[in-house]
Amino acid sequence: MKILVTGGTGYIGSHTAVELQKEGFGVLVIDNLCNSEKHVIDSIGEITGQKPLFEQIDLRDPEATMEVFSKHNDISGVIHFAALKAVGESVEKPLEYYHNNLFSMINLLKAMRETGISNLVFSSSCTVYGQPDQLPVNEKAPRKDAESPYGNTKKISEDIIEDTVRTTGMKAIALRYFNPIGAHGSALIGELPVGTPNNLVPYITQTAAGIRDHLRVFGNDYDTPDGTPIRDYIHVADLARAHVIAMNRMLRNQNKDRYEIFNLGTGNGFTVLEVIKSFEKVSGIKLNHKIVQRRPGDVEKVWADTTHANEELGWKAEKGLDEMMLSAWNWEKSLQAQKNKKS
Ligand code: NAD
Ligand code: UD1
Image (cartoon, rainbow, N blue to C red; front, top):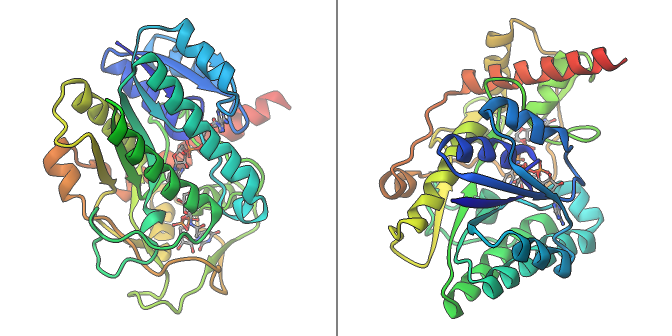
């Protein structure tokens, strides 16, 4: 069976393409390469022994999107990762974010409707919960007003999917990711942050690699054990595995509703200082860091209630924080080795 993976040369999409191929699925990747590189297709091939099919198209273009569906008429399901995802940039460029993320979503759903493809897995985010009133947060918790246009595109996309499912024969699963980190064990694929990273873990590994002088820890006056914010970090390989399970659930008609939502996290929260400590332990490097002011828009603490995913999907995150940090560090070292080879 062939699965279309949009954004499949990106961070989470590439890991999911690997897991899909490991489970025997054929994979067709579409990506416009605005935040990834084509050689990722070769790396996926190196890991799995099979290169996925690749079409370089922009999902904002309805004709190009439809053409892919007409050309590949044996697609059984779609996993939709393609989106712009930089929170800060979305505040500066709201129209670009709404245009890219929502047009892509709409064009994809139209092409699926027209070609009768009924199974969709969508990348959502725990950002839809804002600061939850109760922790751990489960899927029934109310969604809060989005802190950014990026977050709003996730909320609106969930609504678009729910409305579409209601009026077509389509089925969909929205997966709300907590904080994906780490890289594939081979260190052949991982996150490729463009410019200065906004997220904690790439900033840590770049600091340790000497690219950044020091990590700024955004605030230590939160109501948490050491004063720094708490997040639920999840290994990207665990996350990727959940997508294959979600797709199989729909292909085997095991879904309980035509539209379902699952949290994907470990269920454990760690503070920023605990993440740094774990990195120092696995790398043997003392990380230069300074406490600075809070970052506007940051929530204090959030971690997932994963009961629904554990019970319904039979999925549980397996990898712990140390393993996540070690894989992130190995990936950073492999990136630096590649750069040194080129220069
Ligand atoms: P990524 O940027 O590495 O991958 C996204 C891919 O989509 C990129 O390869 C990019 O080139 C492609 N793309 C973007 N717009 C496109 C378009 N119009 N047409 C075709 N391709 C396009 O991001 P990621 O971290 O792998 O995230 C994947 C998905 O998961 C995104 O939807 C993101 O919002 C969501 N998500 C990510 C995180 C995270 O922390 N990484 C957390 C929650 C949700
Ligand atoms: C951010 C986004 C979220 C998005 C997610 C994945 C915000 C407010 N939220 O989540 O919508 O889904 O990325 O892309 O931007 N930290 C530091 N120093 C740093 C970087 C981060 O101390 O240089 C801290 C932050 O304060 C936070 C934690 O590390 O407490 C994790 O930050 P980050 O990796 O950016 O993820 P989130 O803010 O949780």
